[in-house]
Image (tube, rainbow, N blue to C red; front, top):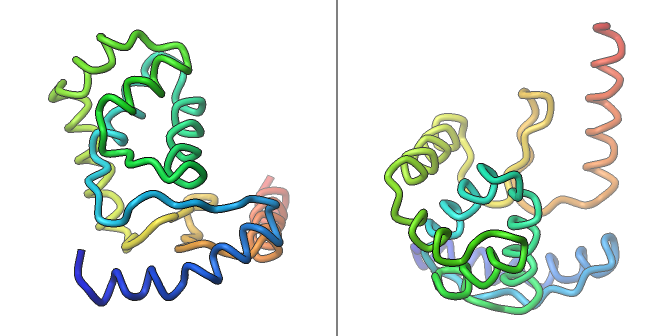
Amino acid sequence: MPPEYRARIEASQPRLEAMARQQYGLEINRGPLGIDSRDALIGEKVAKAHGLGTAYHDAVAAAYWQRAQSIDNRELLADIAASVGLKRDAFLSALDDPEYNQAVEEDIAFAHANGMTGVPALVFAEKYLVMGAQPYPYLKQLLQQVEAEAGSSA
């Protein structure tokens, strides 16, 4: 991770923590910076293929953002997978499946092609890109705009 990017993340941490607490009622206890989250991303593809993508995603996010766990640890990911209903050994094997790895590569290529350079990155109605942690009122306003546009085109 480039030092200037890391510095920008560290500088924004107090604002992020305050926003999470005040607007969403969440306490942040972030995991380590600079880890390789590829296995966690592959794990989400595996979980999604078994209808457990949302549960896995939420559990991994809680591990990283609330329990400060390092989500580059395959054993931790396997424990999370098991906690949401996946078979631990099958999950660990699937992390090395080239098909799931390719799906993650395609997601990364899509993100780069569409100017997504950080997380979170949210896309609304396939036309509005929101980068970084944003205040709740902004997200609510954007969602209302998207809903209004959808209603006027119907």
